[in-house]
Image (cartoon, rainbow, N blue to C red; front, side):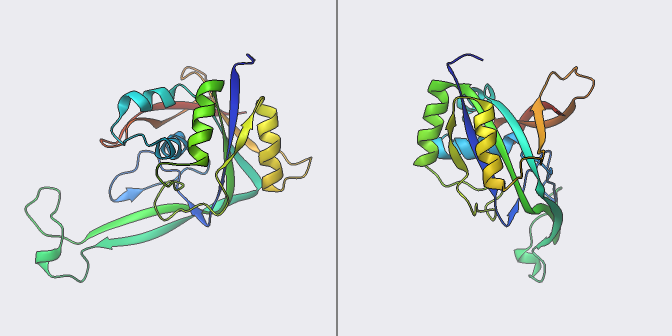
Length: 218
């Protein structure tokens, strides 16, 4: 690999995280491995990139992202049941989708609890250096998927010359033994027969526009 490529190690350790893709207002899901939208969101917040800045988000989309799940802490999916407007008079309830009737809105929000996972972000040394500087001194605070998912451990864990060095650091943080093998999800061509597609590359956070991301477990 070119010596002009660097690798940033990101570690996701929190009481609960949410790696949502294709979430709707009343149904907000989570993957069991780090989504690219969470990685891009954390980096964008640190760098002060506005939610609707599609040009700078496109630059982040050029980065390679490897998603990692540690076998000693895969986590479990939990549902958080929400109502909006429940118990309030009609004047305080939100409008229904057709804007003709006041309703109590029921939402289901899913989180991954008890998990530790990671991502390795690779790109030009100059771009990774800018990201590293921003994550050490962020413009805006970051969370792991939703505002209630506050990191218990610093997300940014350094810049490395090789992907293997970054993975070694992340394995140590996760407390893996030498024989433990993490699950690794690597981006691939959409035409790969093992590829799974997710709407997971942020184009515009403000309008919730995402391009497809092809992944396979390796």
